[in-house]
Each structure stands twice: as structure tokens, then as C-alpha cells.
Image 1 (cartoon, helix red, strand yellow):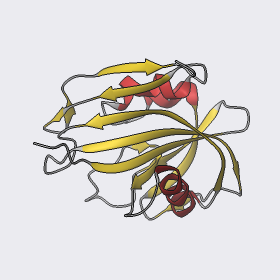
Image 2 (cartoon, helix red, strand yellow; image 1 turned 135 degrees about the vertical axis):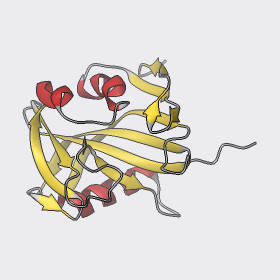
Image 3 (tube, one colour; image 1 turned 90 degrees about the vertical axis):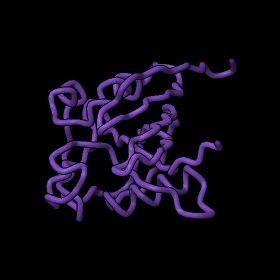
Image 4 (cartoon, rainbow, N blue to C red; image 1 turned 60 degrees about the horizontal axis):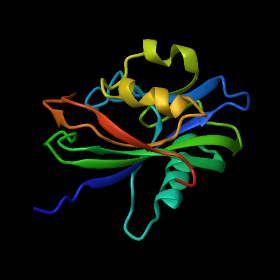
Length: 166
């Protein structure tokens, strides 16, 4: 059977000094499947949209800023991640330069600058704890992982890395 996941972007916007990251605290709607969790910014790709254009649109819509420098940190295949068991495939980006002033909140919740060293102490999706160290380390190689989910929890995590020019 062909793999036909929902395609999405997930971006982590870093402060100019790289010590903080802009996170959304999903605290606006109690019925939100992400309610109470912190996450990067992003969402589903639209038809006819490439992944970078989709990332930039989502960041503009969710945070009110323009992405000036983006780097693909990696990709993750999330079989079974959706609330009805849908498969997702995410393109994970670092946004290392932006223009504008971020919103303080949007329809999903509060936008907060969080010290990178403190992100692991926040309520996150369980699976985020596996790949965020790769995203937050600017020297880490690009990663491409698979994280199957069952009943809202990751059941495994594996990945390969690629260094530039290899």
C-alpha cells in the first residue's frame, strides 16, 4: 500500500543570539489535541505549495514575522500520529534570522520566547524530546527519522544523518 501522509512543516524560530526559541503554548482552546503543550510553529502544506513556501506562510500567519534565513534541520515520518491514526510527514526547519516583531499570541495560544536549555522542562509531545536536541544543535547534521505513534505516544525512534556534500 502506498504511503500517503499528511505533509507538514515545523519551524523553530531562534533569537538573534541563538539562546532562545519562539514556542507556541497551545492554551487557547480546551478541545485542541495539542492543548497545554508547547511546540514549534507550522502546519499542513497547501496544494501546489513547496515546503519552504509553506513554512514561510505558516510562520507569517502564526507569528506575524518573515523568515529571512531558514535551514532544513531534518524530516520525520510519523506513522499513526493523527488523532484518527493518520500518518504525518514533517519537514523540520531552523529559522535563524527573521524580520518583524512576533505576535504575543494567536488563535492557538500564547507565543513565548523560551531559553533553549529550558525547553525540555516544558510540556511537549513525548516524541519531541527525541528530535529537538538535533534541531537545537546548530552543528548537528541533517536528520531523517521515523517515529511511529500508537494511542498518542511514540513507540520507537530511528534516524539517519546526512552531512553536507555526503
